Length: 259
Image 1 (cartoon, rainbow, N blue to C red):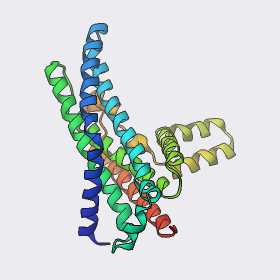
Image 2 (cartoon, helix red, strand yellow):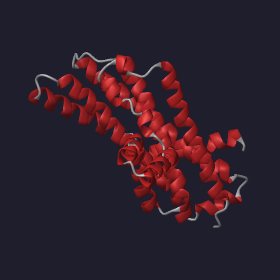
Image 3 (cartoon, rainbow, N blue to C red):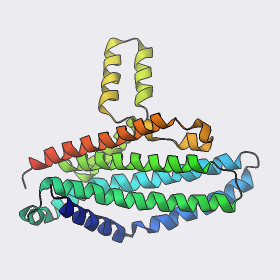
Image 4 (spheres, rainbow, N blue to C red):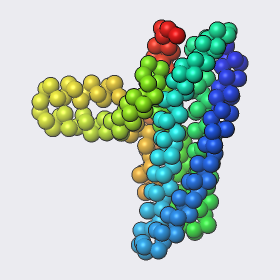
């Protein structure tokens, strides 16, 4: 794999996605926070700080998730449907470079969005004179980015061998299931049924455990609720490793596709 060529291609993907008016979503996020800020402080007099903290991080998560899934699943399919993939693979570009550049380009867009939305979020918190755990929020935002890049890897992998519509539905399903894998294992144990336990254990092993990368609730309740540094590093490594594994699978499948 040519790193320089991959970087140039990922830069093109980044610019292409940015041109699709993705950055307007940042303004939309600011508008949601402005409305939420006014509404919450009018109707909640006791726990408005925690509600606003929760709303800000949750909306950030939803916006990032929508972008990762809807754009991620279409990155490869769009090239196939428009037949531009034929021109790309005819050039001295390997298929592994093609998949990797798509992932890195969209990950770059997500990084910009998460950083921008986090900055806007902190500005609102500062001007509202709320007490907020800034270190917890920054850690939660970073892990949100890791979660979104993992979802992007899922979306691209599914988009390699299915239609955009099916890949979108499956990626949403993986996201929902990935957030409750630990609960599924506990449910299997409670059932006391060996068959159910084996199924839940298999789901836990196959599906990404996205709850490891979800620190929204921890951020809302302060830094003392954030896991220790070893756990944070382990969970971050888990997210990166899972993403790389999915990309390897996507490349393996893409290498065997005929166009």
